[in-house]
Image 1 (cartoon, helix red, strand yellow):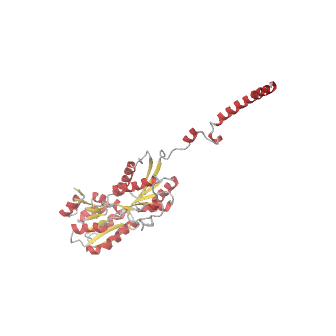
Image 2: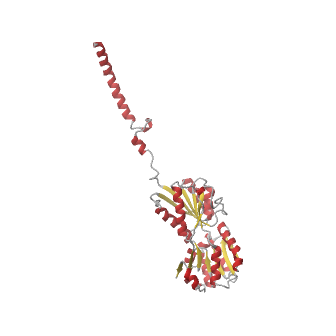
Image 3: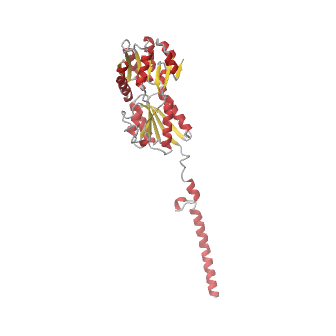
Length: 351
């Protein structure tokens, strides 16, 4: 019995230093997660930022600056903030302008692809085409695109089918041309200046041609390739047209002052495809609100950012609410009296 106790005592005196060394070693391992196959709870909690705190990045590519596209951009940013994605807080927004250059639009798209942004907003058809051609994975939303199917952006309006969808600004061309006859009943011909490089513009010219006959109007076209040609194109139509119709053509709208100048000097009324052109000096439009169009696009973006929807399954949206906008001062400068019936039903009258 004594020998057994002595053996136990010797064993304990030998074992205790080993246990102490083992505990010390384990304590050192716990401070180095890479050496510990089972990380401590504190290490797991701090290992990765939560998706709720991660700042997302949105790239905005705008084809050119003019009031309509600017309004769409600001409406988008404002509505995103209301939806919980405030600029410089939850989301970083990188705004780039192509300055009406397709080459620059492609460079911007390539930049966003290299930066691996979380979402792209392409404002106007050329920038949307550049983005769609460049990236096949990043979600792309477009706005201010008249015919996304014709532009090759989506397979169908109700089922886009890829990583691209958005909102269309297809305007009611027939209703807008009717305004010409209402203000100037004896009008026979309408001049349309448009960019030959913009698919959306050709779509509107074709739509105008399709309805002109039944309205007793003839469409006369002037295609341009740069904004510097707008004034010359307007002057070339003097004496040949009874009114100008300015579609939602980015190149022409960005230089609408040139059209307005010729129209005022020659007393030729100008009807526009959207309300910002009326604010800039055209007489009237029956159309959409680009700020609201941008807001509508932001609501679509919110669903994508939250993982609630994918572009492939999101139908292209259009704006349901249209309004008549009139500019009385512009009418006076162009020698036109706006009928009282038009003034009475207008959603907005600019004095």
